[in-house]
Length: 161
Image 1 (cartoon, rainbow, N blue to C red):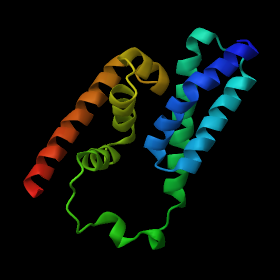
Image 2 (image 1 turned 180 degrees about the vertical axis):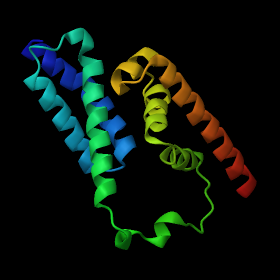
Image 3 (image 1 turned 45 degrees about the vertical axis):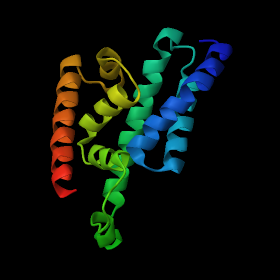
């Protein structure tokens, strides 16, 4: 990969990687760090990465960075920091997107990543498999299970509303 091709990757893919990281981490600062670390790793390996596989390589690196950050934050969280208000609400939701985002946040990590890449970012099963390291069959299963959960969750929310 040449420097020009690298710069083209930065220009065309950085926004998508940022949205992906932000959706997974829910922290703008951490998402920016993921994007920066991802492109730094591409720069270090630019001679070994083909331009045709750069997109999958970048999303794979971003995915792994997100998983590392999530694991680290789970280990660092203490029970003193847990707020009762964070897990309860007394308001009625009127915005469907908030309800859907809330449901997506409750998904297991593999299902959440697969559904975000498929439905939010528009990747095909093969690309998602390359990014996440799952097989195509596992990707399809995770997306199916995520959609089943979302369907059940939204159905329950309709009963509440």
